[in-house]
Amino acid sequence: MSSKLYVGNLNYRTTEEKLKDLFSQFGEVTSVNILQGRGFGFVEMSAEEMAEEAKNKLNGTEFDGRKIIVNDARPKGERRSGDRHQGSGPRGGRNFNRY
Image (cartoon, rainbow, N blue to C red; front, side, top):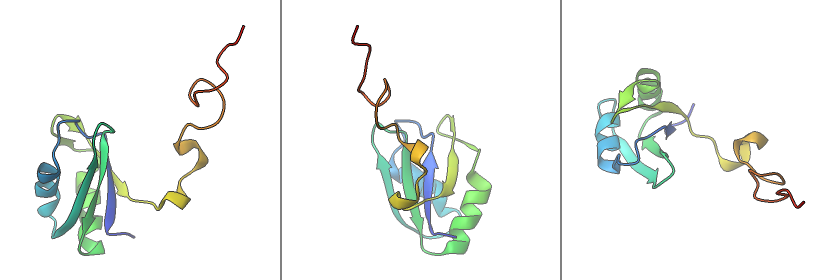
């Protein structure tokens, strides 16, 4: 269990202040970081119990016009290989049709 949460499917107009206000109803929010133009961010709470409650109650709820996803944040090394499009093919930016 982690006190850092991933928050996905955010409205691009959502601010860090709005997100902090949302999560503050479950306890002390120590940091909020939204990756602008990416539609996701991270919320860190001061206690794991608070983060777990926020995750359980907010995941799948509507916020700022979007149904948000709330999960435990994973360190970069723990991502599945399919989480990012890399390598060859159109999604990786290489090997487009050459003929």
